Image (cartoon, rainbow, N blue to C red):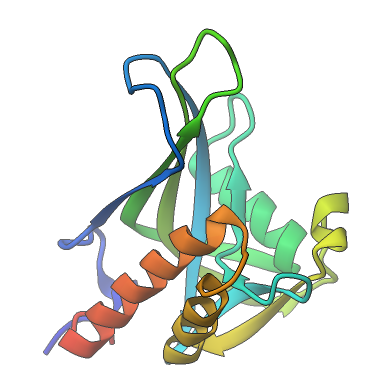
Length: 185
């Protein structure tokens, strides 16, 4: 019998996804931004943030502030985007690296490195405190079945969508694959 993800201390099958958006000059001089993303599950449902403007779904998370630990960033982002209290951080499920051309003249590429952690949240919720851009994009947290979330984002990829939709769709597909193979229970 496979353990549930909450029983696992280290994930044996981490994903490593690389995406390139457009043309980049090279990868010798890369400006990197580190971010964290929370994977919160209840049964077959994921806590995700829906954009009413773009129609896509994303994992709660965002940039790590200077000197901030990953767990502190996860707690801050879950509170801001979902109004959820982080109770526990589980294993690192995987990472994505997204490259695009750098706008800064001293760099060849800009990379957003996102670390996805299994997280558990408490039962007490407060009102989300979204950033101004999140308000403009109509961000709303909610619980979504994994297969439905994957299909929603695949549909959005058929038209114009933010670059992050490709990243989140790839991660949702990986989680869906784990679920189908019995690794995710």
